[in-house]
Image (tube, rainbow over all chains, first blue to last red; front, top):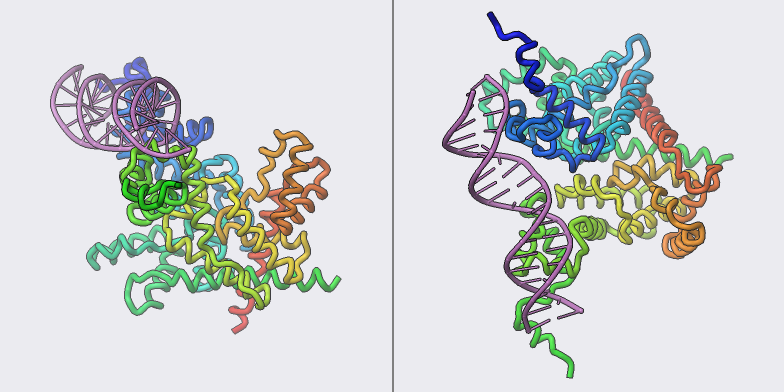
Length: 230
Length: 230
DNA sequence: ACCTGAACACCGTTCAAGT
DNA sequence: ACCTGAACACCGTTCAAGT
């Protein structure tokens, strides 16, 4: 006979990573991100603070988990509309999430871990653009242009410093696994590696930044001319 | 006879707000922002941690002071060039500052205090646009468009929640003082109050956000068409 | 006026011990 | 396998005491 749910149900609640993260988000929403301490969180769950470490490896992992969770709240891409409408709705949905969790943008700004949910979010966004007729190269540009406007992820899109410490075999294996799970992102990643003579050097952030900036300035200049013509 | 610098020079160094802030920035540059604690900072200055409270009211004030200091590192606007060149150089200079202090953007993201240096930075930037032929209204839009791309300030450009708790007389006095010191910013602030039926309601962040987003999308769409024509 | 040190109420996390 | 509690090395800040 296996232990029934009823038996375990009698002694409080069965802790789990999901329950921990859900409680952490609720705590942040209600009392701000500074209130999210391992001790307070344990108290909220009527559990010894140390018990949390069975479901979360440390505070950094907890914060990564929180970010992963709220990024998951962003609506999935809408089907059957043009790329522009789809991107627009996506970004507005992300914005609603950030408004719902006022502490989120600050936390996201400090995180650099690429969680599965974040990767999925970026990949499906890249998919909208690719299917909308954007070249791989232009999709890459588009991410830098939209980037900080969406969340904060796109700042250093490809932090290769971690990959550089791995052996080429392992990197190749990781790339292949990424290709399967995140096809659009991989396309972009591959394009970047081919552009650079040194493999894994990442993209030129300075070039990307100026490209995005010039685009915005073009728009401003156009607005300016039109308003002066009236 | 007044006490000479030599006399005081013998017993260590004369602490000052400037010296505290300078040391804090150096510490953050060398060991990261988490290393910046009142205790470590005191140690770095060979002083009891509590002595710092004579020059800084608390940790928040220390962080505000740090941000104020690094924003002061951004180059002043270049004279005798068109608005576009001036804005471009300004933003690239701000970017260089953020690269010089990798911890800066995260800290700026958590701050909401409008220090004099930040106000001066925003005002002189607004000045470039106004003198370049931008209307007040368009200058306001431009701040939202450039906003997060420059620092992080422009997110909630006018946090009126503080002003609302003051009496109308005090608000008016503050506005008048602001007009003298920050003429271009005041123009924008006034424009906003007139647009809204409720005085002090601030600008419509949703509208501003969508306006900026649409501009970027227009640029992306243009790029897309051109790349498809080739 | 400026600095000091003890004290208080908090942190994250390790480690040995429990069931 | 999961939870616990004491312990360690840190925090920011108040307050009374020094010069």
